[in-house]
Length: 217
Ligand code: AMP
Image 1: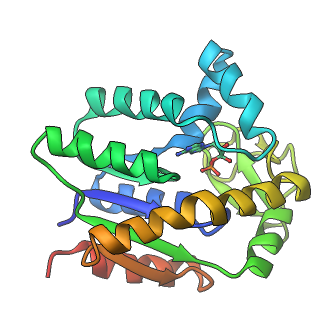
Image 2 (image 1 turned 90 degrees about the horizontal axis):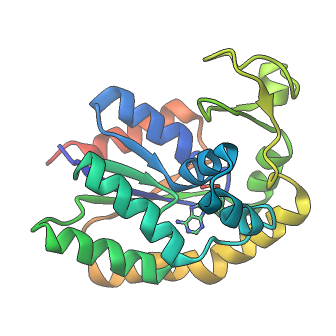
């Protein structure tokens, strides 16, 4: 069973949803750096306030800040994880490799969720997120509006401050310029670990493909 997993993909490719599924099915902790940053921001910590200046514009938070938050998480929780939205730059990927190497460990699986831009835009314009559990829902599909109770935990649903057309343009540009090189880095250094999944399918179908890759051959 794979236990050190990185989940990569553009905005709205379903990284959070799939990481949640894997986490509950196989008891592997789900770590979303975006959610960790939003939680710091909601608590009003200096780290959260600094992160907000970047996230609200759709830009990446500086590497040193993200690396700090990930190091703290690994020190507290150990070496079984599904990273959702990390690493997003080659520097972060190199940091993760060396942090694991220092622990005589390494990644088991790198998953890339692929989604065409038209579908990314459609999903983002319709997306509501829970402020507490982070679950996301298509407003149209689930007949929900901002302010409604989250179907999972009953906390309020909101539109994320970076789920707007302007921030999305920036996030897509950031994905192309900074995160696609991470995919190239993994293709070059860990070609056998990288698996590509079509994220345009329904979430159950995507999970079934993922689950097949999680179990050791
Ligand atoms: P997400 O919830 O994964 O869509 O992330 C939301 C926002 O948090 C991103 O647009 C970035 O501003 C920031 N963020 C999350 N993860 C990272 C990361 N690994 N490196 C830099 N910024 C990040």
